[in-house]
Image (cartoon, rainbow, N blue to C red; front, side, top):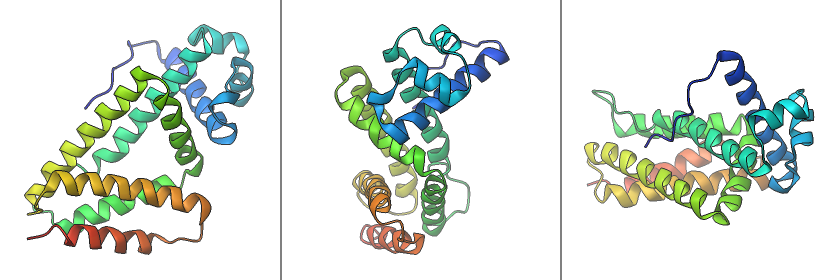
Length: 196
């Protein structure tokens, strides 16, 4: 599923917007969604309040666009898992999923922002629907790949893999000593349970 594309803008405008949205995600990760103000995001992005307000007239615009920006980033990362290449095996799927988690762990502030934004979206019907649609599209895409690998009930397996990633990310927030080999072992157990 592709998220709505922003209208093409001059490169300078796009760079400023992306800088503002990245700073918004950083503030959300550090202090939560409730901490978002134009002034706070301006300070984090080293841009003036006027520039932030020009691109995002309201606080709601700022948070909602940061949410969509974050989903587009996640979509890009998840494409690595759901893009089957000729000759790949289930072990390649596992490797790609572990690599996704590894890249996520390299940016722990974005993982925290992800969960803050999900909680925010739960209170916003439009955003909640976007999350559901995004997860459904990811599930369908992942299930199609798993089916090619001979995984039975591939849609259910895909949902479990997505939830396993989420659970591991949450667990790492409170247990940073966890290693990726633990995640790999869990993922292998899940996938092997669905193999014919």
